[in-house]
Length: 110
Image (cartoon, rainbow, N blue to C red):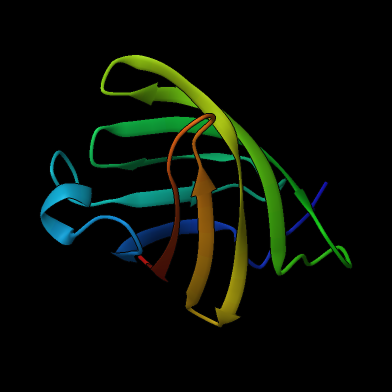
């Protein structure tokens, strides 16, 4: 577990590889919330879910790999992804959907 993760907090997604801002901010400001253990939740467009993460490296993890479960347009969805601190207030990540799309994204600390 990634205790006291440097990724802890709320992040606003501002760019996604596969989708434009009209889609990923469709219902709410696209976000990802990370707790001190590397777990959290996210929403972009019509996709939302909760994830269980595992940090890599020391106790102050700057990279988290996770599995997630949630919904994509009211259909059950799941798979995996990763988050990585790039600068103090910027992260990059990737979310994969089982049997479907995969998109990298960029986010800034809220």
